[in-house]
Length: 314
Image 1: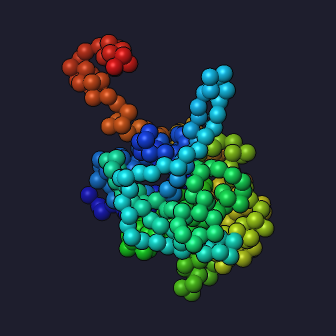
Image 2 (image 1 turned 90 degrees about the vertical axis):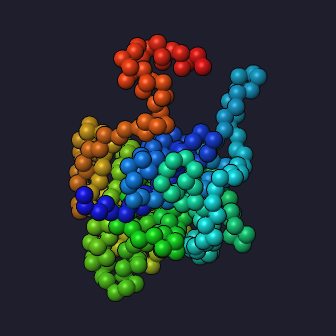
Image 3 (image 1 turned 60 degrees about the vertical axis):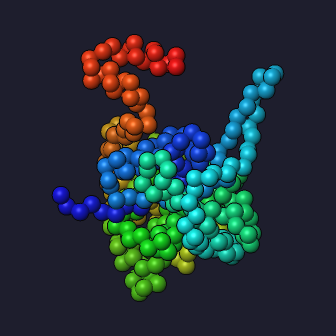
């Protein structure tokens, strides 16, 4: 078998275990299952994400039936301190990001970036997943994308393919372009070389669910990374669409089902320079979601419904 490429999988959230509160829903569950499946199949892959101190949200029902959204700080004793830190620029301030590693959940290594470090202007940037407003969202995406690429460099992990799960990691692509331009390539040359390295998975099948930012905000936040307005407009348009930029920076894109492939291609058919969107039917990680008693009953030819009912009672 040909040698498999080394993949760095970027995602805003990972659902590896219900006790590890760094995910909100389906996107994270998919990402967590992919890291576990990669481990089972011995696929050369690492994950890049963010260590969310407060996670998404904890909901509680009061005695009078009201729903309360609460946020608490979580500490995890299974995270490994890599001893590595990287710096990123956000609003002309330098943020030092600590890099943690987790591989406790039968997953390939997942490296998590953490801004809760002494000296950072806002240590809460990596507190709440999808929290706050546009400025904080862009800051978090700079941490994920730019910080993620720099962490891989400092960890000495050579990467063949950068996989963007949804459009949040787009600034990783900007960072890859910046690196190549600093080494003497023109913008067009850097973009073409970067396209060969990036694969993108698009999720939300409605235009309103795809993130868009003003160029004024991106430049103010430091997301231009030494590129200029014309470069950024070429990638994401004006206003800057994270999904359009991802489509233009990738050599191929995935829809998450065969029907979604058709929907996504129709949705983005007007994007000049877009990569082709193919259909990938998502599955689940059997070891996480399928009880061993069901597997045993199936192999023995027993009634699955009976076993299913027994499991629900236990």
